[in-house]
Amino acid sequence: MSARATSTTLLASSLAAALAAVPAAAAERAPQVSAGVGAYYLTGDYGSSAGDTDIWYVPFSLRWKHRRWTVKATVPWVRVSGPGSAVPGVGGVSKGGTRRTESGLGDTILSASWLALYDRQSRTGLRLKGKLKLDTADEDKGLGTGSNDFTAAVEGFRTTGRTTLFGSLGYRWMGDSDVYDLRNAWLGTAGFQTQLAPRTSAGASVYLRQKISRTGSPRRELNGFVTHRLTDAVRVQGYGIVGFADGSPDWGLGASLRMDVE
Image (spheres, one colour):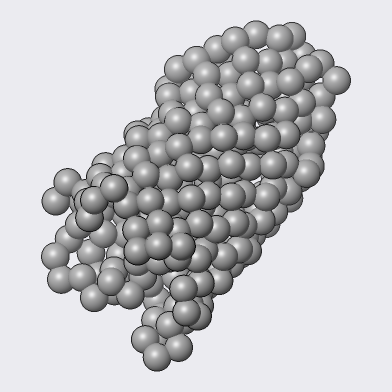
């Protein structure tokens, strides 16, 4: 896939998981700290005739929430096996070359969001979010782009009964890279989450993004997820993705665990 990447493809499912708790988050009096770990596998040819690229993305995260603010840091370990047509957290960036396998530290993600508006009567809200990708991965190994990038987004949601509808629109500013010819891009999500049981919810979303390199391709993906609270403090999530563009993986699966520590 891609981190957040994957980190970015995981944006839709992370947003959905957070939206269900928005009213409670807005009313919090004491800060809440949680830690998380996940494992995601993504595969696809990313438009390359040189073969598939397989990506393992294992993020370790720490999150702080207080009233309307949420701040999160994610440090991933990544493994990439393929012709170099895709980069974790970014997606398809080139037509690829010689096949190889590399692993190591991925790009660090720092994000902050602010619940700008929330109306309790209509259960409608608006969140502003900023995300900074720091160049901590080795671009010569194909584990990152070699640039610091910034994304700004507006996220809206509305809850009716047990179902929350959500969507976002953002813009990603790509930094300078010695390896790739990067360009800025618009991105967006749209989807829903519904409560299946007191501790279980599920949903789906669509993720779209313009191509971010001259030799790359746009991303179009369908994401599905199921979230279950094992306890009041521990939550697990299963995640699946299907791609419909050369900039996206053909498919991917993953799981994550988050635990409140304070």
